[in-house]
Amino acid sequence: MPTPAQPPAAQDRVLLVLATLAQCNGPVAAQELVRATGLPRSSLYRQLARLKQWGFVQEEDGSYAPGPMGLQLAQGFDASSHLVHMARMDMQRLVAQTHESVGLIVAVNDRAICLDMLESPQALRCSFEKGRSVPLRRGATAKCLLAHLPAARRDAVLDAWENEPPDPRQPDRAALAAIRKAGYACSQSEVDEGVWGTSAPLFGPGQRLAACMTLMAPASRALPREAELIQLLVVAAARVSRLLSLS
Image (cartoon, rainbow, N blue to C red; front, top):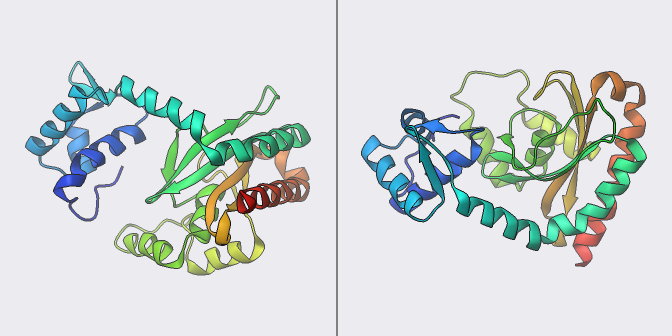
C-alpha cells in the first residue's frame, strides 16, 4: 500500500486508518500502518484506540485487523445495496450462460472494490473475492472503471501516478479513451497470473458510472471463446444499466 501523497486532514485520520486496515488481507503491525498511512506513530495509536473502543478494530499480539463492528456494517450493506440487488439477476444469468465467474466492482477513491461475486460452477475457476480491492492501475476492471470515471476524477488519479515508477500495465489517457469507445476492457494476467477478464460499465441515471460488471476465467479456457464472452458481458451490462436508469 503506497503512502498517501498528501497528509490527511485531522478529522479524516481515523477514516484513513480504518480504510487502510480494510485493504489488508490479514492482521498488520503498527509499523506497517505508519508506512501505509503516513501518520506519525503517536497519531496512529490515538486513532487505533478510538477504533478499538467502538469495535471497528481488534488487536492481537501487537497486530491490528478490522473488528466485529465491520461485520455488522457489511451485513447492513448486503441487505440494503440497491446496486447489488439490481445487478444480481443478470449476474446469475451470465454465470449460467458462460459457466464462468462474474463480479460487481465499484471505484472508491483510487481503488476498485468488489461488492458482489458469483463463482463459476466449474472446478477450475477464477474469482475476485467479495470485499477485495486493488488499485485502479491494472486489470480489466480497474481500467474500465478508470476509463468511465468523470474526467476530473480520472485526471486526479492519473496525475497522482506521475512521480511513481512506470508500469507497462498501467493505462495512459489514450488507452482509456479506447476503452470508452469500445465499451469494455480486457486483460490477461495483469492482476492474477493466468486469469483473463473482461469488464463493462454499468450506468445509472444521467449516464453516470455506477459500477463495472466483470467476467473472469482461466485464460486457457477463455481465449478460444473471447469474442463470445465479451458479447455476453456487454449485453448483460446494458440490461443492468437500463434497470438502474429507470429505478
